[in-house]
Image (cartoon, rainbow, N blue to C red; front, side, top):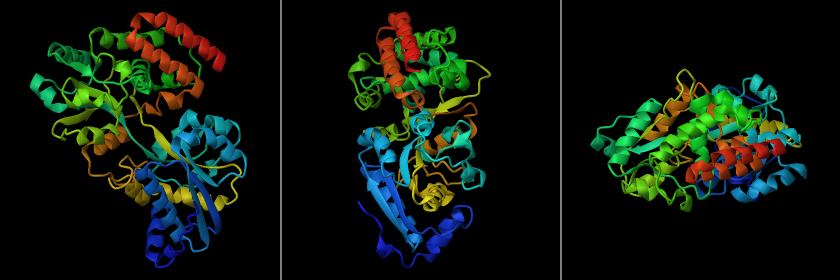
Length: 420
């Protein structure tokens, strides 16, 4: 799909001035053709991406934007070939370890100099997610929080308050179980939801740095600290905290348990809120809290999966790519594309305005002020793909057959030694 939008190239002087100012200062007006491949293929994100391309094209009279949108799942297998043969200038991808294969293969451009030059004011808190080997390899453009979404009306009925500690979480859960409900709904048929539980339990038990060391393959799965994480998890399993037969449900199929009041909470990403609202729950019935502290004194790490733009190492129009990355991360653009009429997620620029939405505001506050431990990208992004697949199988098995833990950890450790 070629998107050079000639009809938009007139009457945009004011818009150009505002947008360039939002990016932190003037830069050279790019020329030629900027090629972008995006995996924002779902209808809402696609409209955002097409709007970004059209707007950026309109800002620069001597530039044509050539945008190709590919299927999000297909892109996961196509990206390496796309970067190797006749690469585009800019692509969509993901942060942290998910970018490692392309960094290590020399397919992403090192853009540390752009970060150092001040192109990305307001992105300091998320710089680490784009850092490998002491260098930066892209920019984020959106992220969203994970945490515990719960039925506030049921908490009120049972006289419960939001827990801040593990002891309070367990005490709340016991009251909920005694009332004939499950504490948490979850659907593990597609495995990744179990990964979210491990992420939080491990970060809260052992800390963010340990969690990331495990993700990098530097810690054996049979380590006693990993066992401590599973011991905390088993406390919930043994008390009947989770819905039965969760391995038969997708994450969406597990939503009705919370909607119907058979379970009171869901550890999930903020994308679940729309589904819960659409199912009939009101904001008076819903609320959110940060996963509670287990080991005191550990700064809290959070899962906040981050979507990113990268410049191909073989990019032909590097200056246009630099200008686009600066444009898309500016506070003004971040406010717009992450608003309720756009992605409905969190802006990565700390100077952006946050949508007037209860849960987006709470997530922005939590990640901006109360995630000093660090921002994780989620189990299936922080672990290498092969290890993530084996690992999540083990996590789901543990939730169903917790007595299998020793065998599971030995299997995961064998996989670690082979894969890393």
